[in-house]
Image (tube, rainbow over all chains, first blue to last red; front, top):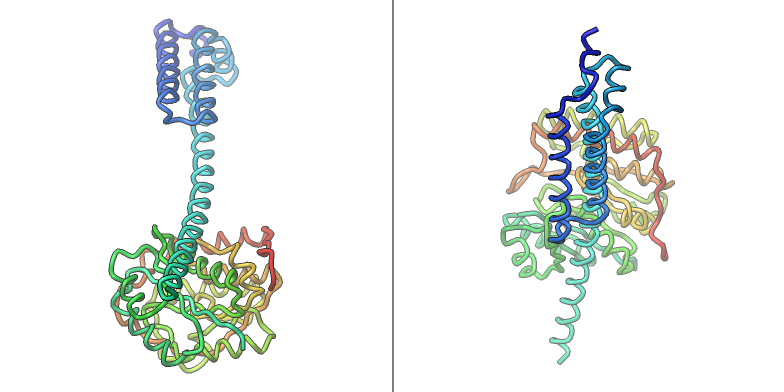
Length: 128
Length: 238
């Protein structure tokens, strides 16, 4: 039963997870302070950091899952993070697609508007 | 007298645009012309303006779909009865634009395509273009129920009913084949007539061999999804 040997997360791992989570929170807060990150995205990141902190403090969930599936707990941890990241990237490509769509419509409207302004100016010049 | 607008999408076409505009003045003097300059980095805009054409300049490059759709929006809002799409590189037979328009004005179709394959044309595309286009034609044929052989021809005329759809829904790149499916899904009808295409007079073709696979996959996927989408029309008079 090699998997049951690691009943608890090693202390160093817990400290590492906690440290990285706190660092992530600080980075997100700083990005928000500078106005580089919209609140709706910042919330996702803060929730991520919060969940990591909880894993650091209460590792039992991860250990229980690891024992259930006969995985190493690190494998469980990375699997969770991997799928979470996948979901995050998916939501980004959706957001980018929507931005591209808006960008196209705005570009077209701007060009049409510039053209009608140009037309009006020409009419004014030839009229006077 | 129906009002007709000829839409010429142009991206870095300074070599050929003047000749195309001159040819238009000779062969289609009754029709208005608008050049959609798709963010060109050469002198396309000033040459077209110098030749007396209306020019709509896109501040950034949107690609062929975004450029042509700008023309459709302009035609729709300005109340044109017919919009004709024609390339700036001199491959499309400008002299046959009146044939497209007259065929459209008979009223039994909403889109008339100038086809390279219908009858005697000397047009010979490269191997990859031929392969891609023949597969694509079969896919489009399957979904819209046949009748169109040259699904990728960008030499075409549409009426206001088609404009009301295309001003709202038009694909971004390689738009021609998918546009047929969109119109079909909107209950509109397309037909084609034979035209004589020319080989390029200058500039570079936008479809090379490496893009063929991407092109195929993208358009086929888009068409499959289109079969499950709803397309709305722009509100207003058709």
